[in-house]
Length: 348
Image (cartoon, rainbow, N blue to C red; front, top):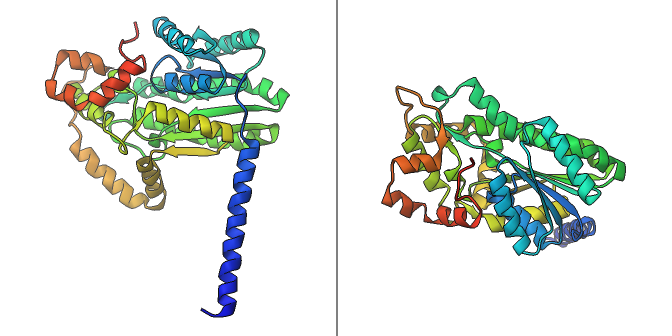
């Protein structure tokens, strides 16, 4: 290497180091100080929402959580208060704009303002397309997409007036590539990703940061509440086992919550985890044809639709009808998460 080439390499290395140092300094400078902030977590009564609520409380936030089931909310409130959190619980269906407006008004009256909104509420339907109806897609879209839009539109006026606020949208790797037998879920998550990215661009000048969270599989015990259609027993088997796999296939809810809250503090544009989800998202963008072929192969391995179609039911009910010791062993990690995250009972 010539002297000139060495100087060029050294100059490039120095510039890169300075750039990285400057970026880290900027990140730290804009990192939020959370103690005393008021945070709303939708779907905060169980699963990932409860884990995020615990992490926000650990960071000194005052909490408001909402969900549709009052018994779940009561259990979550007890859990959070035992951890020293100040928490307001409000029954609310985030798909209902009027209920959301009422909830936001109540939280604002109680705390004075809202600093952080975490749009986490969601439902999962696992079934082949042939067994779904338009109503199934509309129902999931109402919660997983409009359940993001409704709270966001409700908090924006006050955040804009104060020129500050943080919005965190929990989407999914299903919003970057479509998993067969999860069409309603992935359609809604694609829409949520697009809304979240566009929202960040439009509200940045108002002093509001928007973070799009794109998690892969997490161990939250959600397979007990996810709705199974088609060949319900076989659909439940593959989904529950996949949702209970160890790291790095899945990630624990507590670790996920720490990553999410840190991303929110830093005002990151997007946060994708674990590494398997990040790789999948990158491959889907770079190699769409190969990704599509891989998903076609996955679809061939999934259960065939039955000749007669029944209404989808929660996974826990499917398991009650078809108990299996082997399946319970294969889902040990997922069940432990369900116990820790208030997933042990089905909504009334």
